Length: 150
Image 1 (tube, rainbow, N blue to C red):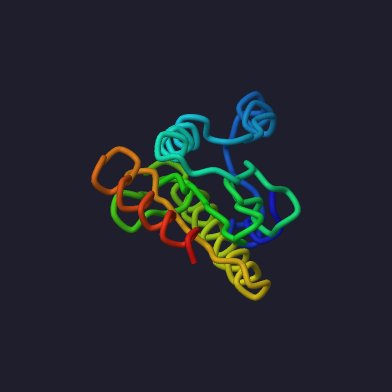
Image 2: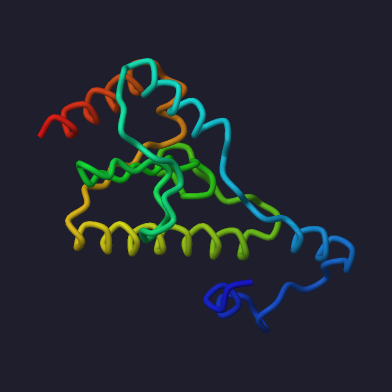
């Protein structure tokens, strides 16, 4: 568990969590959200956009898509994990943990994007819910095309 998250919890840890549950949750490692990233990937392929790499590890935040030649980083943000103002929420169980976790994710996102902008990289954020709406997805694709032309 992250240091900052421990500071937000009373005593630095959860209370009354069964050992089996704790070990199960500790073993979970996120890799990427295949459904949201795949949806966006298919949309950019269908629109004919080229020149991107996925999960570029040499930049802060490891952008989901990075256009090297144009210096554009694209992040596909899950509404729950990144605290979407439209449809994000905090679960009712273990709410102090989840609130701290999601707020920390938002802080980290903001910091990483600031670092990228300082390097001269343009940052595009796409919320998960916008991938489900063809109009919103089309707007993001068109915005990306415009940025790639400049």
